[in-house]
Length: 207
Length: 301
Image (cartoon, rainbow over all chains, first blue to last red):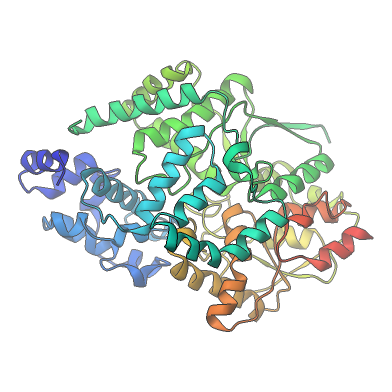
């Protein structure tokens, strides 16, 4: 339980809808859902969602804070935007799912082991370091996130794909040292730091 | 036709020795024929992709894209921003839209941009377009067909549009459920688009191909199976993530499901480069893991 989470519980006094509206990306759309379920039927990974989007929206309105934020469902979003274009009420569902995932992660409630959560974190750290994706470092960190043994196993599984990419000039085996990124990394990092500070302040996150 | 100039946002995967470097090679060849000059945005950064959201909050993500827009509006003033990557295009466009709807978010973004010395450069006025929009809208099929010297006769191609060039913005005049532009491009290059390719807008799993490989490979299998079912010999796509996911996991899918997939997955720009007379190298065909022998044959003629 993080300090931010405790602060949010105190601040919103179990009015979870209000909390989502204030802190989650596009959260003020949640009350617009009319429970038709088109989003659930349109999701490519629909079967993998314990709670499909329309159910999550209803759970938010019913105040099921813990169940929603600890759910792995929104981490199944592939960002295909099918739900958005099909929703009869035009809810930005993809963004709300990203927003919920981000909020759950920020509060320390999201599943520590969820692979997409971990991958997303590795990805963000990767790009905020040099300004551009280092694909080699990204893959290595992903495969080795559960330690050496499992990393070697995954690495072997992915060997064919990796060699294919290297052979066709689409993966630089030397990228850990040769990858350059942008010139103004200093400016970029300062800019992101500032953006984080402003967002924390606006949302009342404990620092 | 007069030279056309754009402010170009290539994106991380288009860099040399990155996963879509062959896309870039073919785009350069295609642009040479069409007399398109791409002015790279100086020192552009990653768009945050669709997977940056866990650690990267809303404002930091928009700030990343705003930096690129500001750099473009500063150095390549009055030029439309053109991206070849679906995610780059989508992310940049989303930021521009969001900032135009929220004064607070715009002010916060500018305050962050100050740290990179760009607070006065963000205007958010320039159109942000995908390369296929440039082709369709600024040239049109007829003009795109004129430079064809080696029509791709007899090749049956499944136009796999995927998600992010199609939703939520899409290409003007196309439907979300059955966009036709890729089929028309295929036809314009002298090849044969397969009819009723029912998985043309199915998601390949996107970034979740890394984190949830089994679930994503179910998607990829559907996309490839349907292409075969409709008689395709090749798949073509406008998106680097679609290309990569549908191409590189074919062996793993074969192992899991006992299938015998071996279908080339190419970019529209590769088809165009070959039809415009480029050799295999100029069309980036040496970058395809599943080689496209039919294209290589035409390119060698």
